[in-house]
Amino acid sequence: MGANREYKATLFSELFSDPCNLRELYNALSDTNYGEETPIVINTLENVFFNDLKNDVSFTIGDKYVVLLEHQSTINANMPLRCLMYIARVYEKMTEERAIYQEKMQEIPKPEFIVLYNGIKPFPPEKTLRLSEAYKVKDEIQKSSGNLDLTVRVVNINPGYNDDLLLKSEALNGYTEFVERVRRSRDSGINLRDAITEAINWGMTQSTIKTFLNTHGSEASNMLMTEFNIDIAKEVWQEEAREDGYEEGLADARKEIETILADKDAMIAEKDLEIANLKSMLTKT
Figure 1 (cartoon, rainbow, N blue to C red):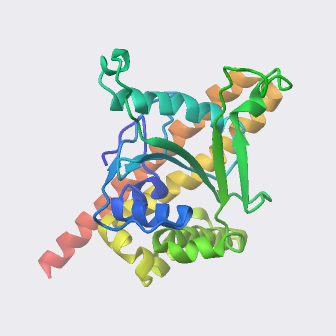
Figure 2: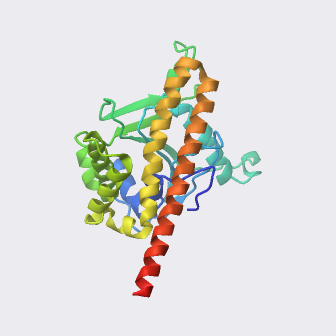
Figure 3: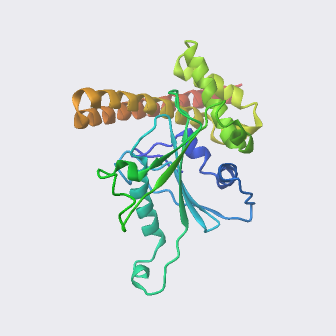
């Protein structure tokens, strides 16, 4: 997955861009037992809502279900509306232009919308968000013959909430423990970069995430740095939006995210230079 200025991969999105990890996670979430013979097709679309935002992972499994998977550290009440906009684009990509005008019914995969929450604010083990909750006229929802609704399943993946789920998915369990270790280090006063380094050193000894870290190397540190800093930027955005209005808060948040990504790119360049110098020293010896 190539990174660019419009989208920087997070550890979560990169980890679950692996079909095997996705199949395992879906089986854990849905209590199914799909094996390797069941195909996973990733169809994540970029730049659906704004230039700097995208869905985390979208995929079909066995050509029967299309799953929109999001990871969030804050709960967004507009997720049902976002998912509605997104699934329309996914179906558009899946369907031939003329097919919807044919008399024969065009079969489509059944949609599922899942948010995995690991924020620090209290949240129940599981909750359902509904598009109909946003309707201005709520007393007529059930009476309308043209009723439209969409449900989003929000699952709390913090330790102690859905531990049975974590035991069924090694990748999710490894990711959750990884993030938790970073948080504990930060709470003890360690700066973010050192906390991430400590977590990576721990992760290199764990089978659940060791392969991923070996494959991605120092890039994993940069992805997690982005993930944590963008969460911080979102909190700043929300606070400023409440105090100064939506547009100004949005502009400030985008500037903050651009700064974070620029710092991350500089850190990558610094690490690359360190590696080059080390290789040069080893060659001379």
